Image (cartoon, rainbow, N blue to C red; front, top):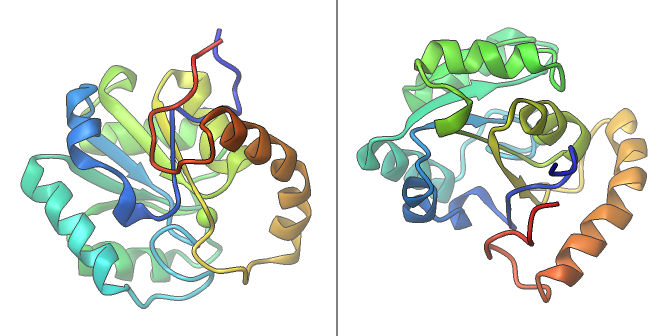
Length: 178
Ligand SMILES: [Mg+2]
């Protein structure tokens, strides 16, 4: 069984996630984290390459949904509206329920859904538990909550190991499962 923390794929930035690679794996729905994945922590401004990636993903036929634990649902809804995608607010990741809610909105199941985010213990564990494909990104900016900064201490050795297994080349297909 695949470890619950291990991502299927890694990339530095959302716009480096290969849409064709996702499609080829059978992915049709994508559950996206918000803070430090699509926007800076606690911000709303969308960088041009983020907009372009979302647009390209939609063009490719992927269904997208924001799944965010952010305290203020209004901010999440505004970003989702601006991107023209669905959203789950106060999702409660890493609970599997958070990802199930997203899949329900997209009308996809675990076999054809991928979760993308910048935090191992929030964005990956619940999704891996359900058997989704997962993509781990580097956080967009170093700014984040004190709570997240603590959790990063636990992430660090895992990220280092995975990067080593991939020869340090981001965006490459994940290491063998197991
Ligand atoms: Mg995040």
